[in-house]
Image (cartoon, rainbow, N blue to C red; front, side, top):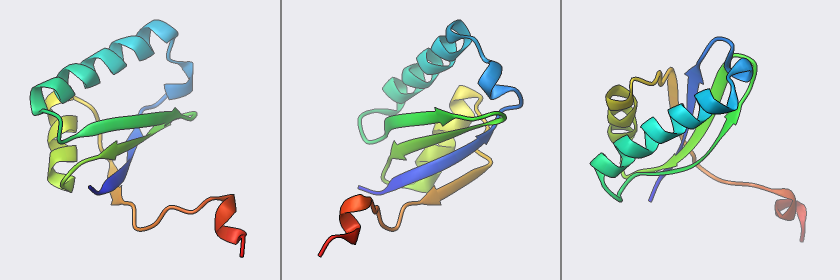
Length: 91
């Protein structure tokens, strides 16, 4: 199934409290439960003013639907073409 990286512009994201991050996570999980098992949240990275989220989903449209239902921005959604890591450099 395709993997997507979602860029979410959230001013002050790095200043969100653990309680605020928990609330966002719970809202996301509630929407995922409504949408069913075909969409999965892998993890997210919080930076100064953005969140970068990794999802597995059958389509970009479903990623956008999750964002719409949860009230989350999805400023840019990119389908992952290939994953590389340090082992890619090995013979």
